Image (tube, rainbow, N blue to C red):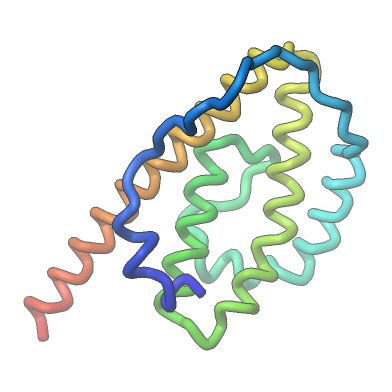
Length: 152
């Protein structure tokens, strides 16, 4: 899907606030029964199966805890690999699942003791980091295409 929809998603830059309708009342969300220990176990099980793919496509080793910066890099490393190898896009998407489980465990551990307001700020920062990584990734990709064109 990455290659099929590249003309659309590649043009999107940044993000914008969604218009609010009605009165906004602060509400504490319901607790989500997610267990970071179990998510880390799922990551460990998936790591055995996916580690060779990760070594092939990731620009840095997988850390023990995936913060927003590492997650953004991992996502765009996978995107780049999927665009270069469209026939392997399903395999690459599957290899992302254990990393997502580790990212989710890391996020839960990071925000567990925070207020909703503070944890929302962490989510916003994660979005900003993702936008910045997309911009840098796009620049690297454009530079790579320009080099390829000049050597052709």
